[in-house]
Length: 175
Image (cartoon, rainbow, N blue to C red; front, side, top):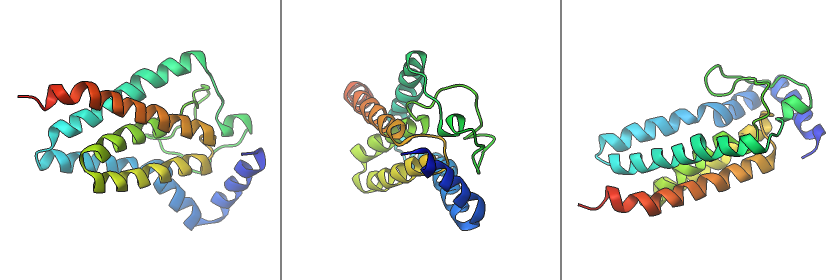
């Protein structure tokens, strides 16, 4: 996407409360949905599946993404185009000077958890995939990432989930 897209999105976000609220919810705060889902699954006795999702998150978000950042530094749209995103969160989406946009950590996190949930709970997982897509779109609209940063984040998340399911499922589900 070109520079005009991001600058136009910032104008729309600044001028429309509904538009800003919608993308702020999906691009920043929907992560609270994942926490609530994890608590629910633990409460109904599915802690092993939550543990697998957490391991996929750790692998993708805390191991693979930082390794990519070491060798491949990419600016965020707001850094390259010199604007302050219309929506910030002190906890989930801070302004940073570091060039660590590639891959999108939100995309890695959501995709890794969503794929584990999809594997064990297809209906709930389908909802999670939809949420993952909306979160990725929100990250682009808000000016935190380029589309290809989100796409690669999704790929890293899916591969992390598949690796964890393949290697750790036999350990957690064998008596």
